[in-house]
Amino acid sequence: MPMLVCTHSDEDAIRSAAPVEGGDVAMPPADTECQAVARLARAHFGVATVLVTLSNAHGQRLKAVDGVLPDVLPPDLSGPSLQASTATDGMIVVPDTWVDERFRGKARWPRFYTACALTNADGLHLGALFLLDDVPRALDDAQRAFLREMAGLIAHGLERERLLPTLRDRVKELEAGAELMTLALAGSGTGVWDRNVVTGEIHYSPAWKAMLGYEEHELTNRIEDAYLRLHPDDLAYVEAAMRAHFETKTDSYAVEHRIRCKDGSYKWICSRGKVVNRDSDGHALRMVGTTTDITALREMAARLQQSVELITNLTNEVPGLVFQYRLMPDGRAFFPYASDGIRDIYGLTPQQATTSAEAVDAMIDARDLAAYRQSIEESATSMSPWHLEYRVQLPRQGLRWRQGDARPQRLADGSTLWHGFITDVTERKHIEAELQESATIDFLTQLPNRRHFMMQSEAELLRLRRAGSRVASVLMFDLDNFKALNDRWGHEVGDRALSHFAALLRAEVRTSDIVGRLGGEEFAMVLPDTGTDAAVALARRVQQRTSSTPLLCGDAHIVLTASIGVGTMHATDVGAYQSLSRGDKAMYCAKERGRNRIEVDGD
Image (cartoon, rainbow, N blue to C red):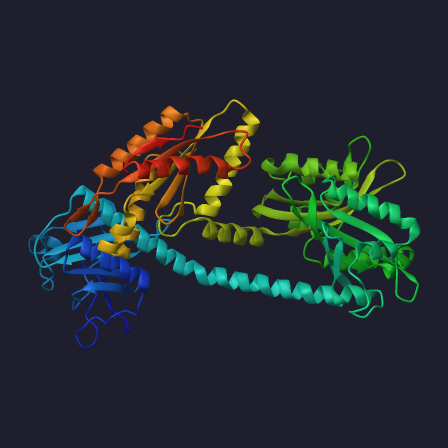
């Protein structure tokens, strides 16, 4: 696209665009979402032209157009003005430019002019959505509100368009990290195993078999054979550790023991694993883990004690904190050893933590301090590995995320000593949060999608069980005759109808209520601390608001109706799906009895 020159008005310092070479504004590249909104806006408002422009320090750039393309981009009066004494509300409506001082002496603009600002979540001005027409006209409050909604959709799409490349790059970085981890495991002599607890089968990676001197086809998958390879003196210990994890007494399985190789010799290995799948009764179904040859490590343990200075120098170069943490029987705690990485992880010097852990505890975010202390106590009690993700508040870095991993050891005096590693996982937590938001919101309606809605509903059911005396109601909504609406008006209007109805639902809910789109034209609500009578009253309000707020499609007013089912969430429900099923049953009863009705499940 040719560059558009920026001009400035002495009256308002308006950012505008001069004609491009040849006298015509160039058509923008295809932008499906912006173009669709422009097309919908033109059809809805019945104007000659709808434009979407982006603004920066050099002027405006055309993003989308529907209708007659002007020779010159109109001035963006909705943007921040350098000379104006008061800020606008983000929308400028000029019923007739021929009698407006701001357009006097300029080119022959269209008679009707409206500019609605496009702003991101931080309030930054991105551009404008223009309505232009050849005849004077005005906008009522409803039209202004709808125009703002459309501008919001465009701004949201622009922000998403800006963020997606960054997210993709971060995902690629994570994938590259995962590939590097796979290569590191292969190069470090670590094998992977996958156990089917139900069938008694265990599958080993080629690296696992090679670690014991076996070819890939030389080991069976029977768990009984796996136990036969254990050293007799270690068998009871390994079985006890495995059983404790199966019974959820430990968070993970981690043991060091001897195992017989193909040539009859024994190696020391460290096996770590975790149950990744359980049935509804909590019984273990599948477990995955790794095995590392630690024979050489154990043989070198004595010699490594004499290499403290070398280890210290090495760990100080590792990004993160390598540490020893000791908890005394009387509750006192301190760090016998802390690498220089403690400066980045906690903003402290190694010396500040050697006599007391209080300086470190003071850096833990107040929201996570109790969980941090509890996790250490549980690790000391069960002698299970310590693992925790938690937040810290640092004077210079602010709020950051940390991940700690350590293995406990009981000393002769009754104290517990951990050897571990703490890393900065702030960036990963941010990426996880961004990806989670993208995965939980239905793009069309901006409501929680089915998966996220069900997770929230399950959480409410759990709260209901804990409280005992609380109640909750469920509402199921289905837009009536939606297929006929799609057939008559087209899918674009159908999508608008879904978005329109979602906005009506949002207008009725409280902050504690849960609302989502389950799919198609079906929506649902969970109303905490709400009995059947109050739920029916809310359903009536939704029904009334829906009938009194038709969907505008050009000159047509499309009146929507919905069949509504009301159910009750019981603390005895196995899952939230049961209460939703009751509401769904009542909703279908409403449809069968004539639609646009409210029916209450009798259960």
